[in-house]
Image (cartoon, rainbow, N blue to C red; front, top):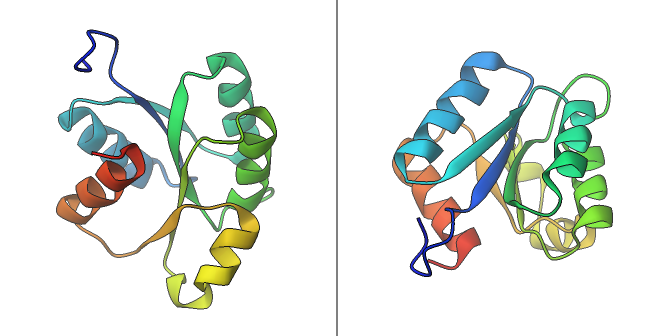
Length: 128
């Protein structure tokens, strides 16, 4: 619950690998947050549409088959421009600050990471 008594923030987790997606969702729930999961950019787009603005922030796997995390980020921006998004990737060194600003991501969570780093990154996105 939030300090104002409302529901906790809901984080959208988008990753094509079920074990990774499930681990992220469990960790977020352990932080007292809600987690909505999607296994592809297409599922993420549907989840964003159905959530009617209740999803913020989003953790997006950058490299997924078919439409990747950038497509999901574009859709998130179209539906909810201020919603923060964090790209999750093993190729973080390929993305500089200029790239993040250009694509509209708040940051990158580089793999491998531990739950402590996840907690820090999500707290920063939520302004906690």
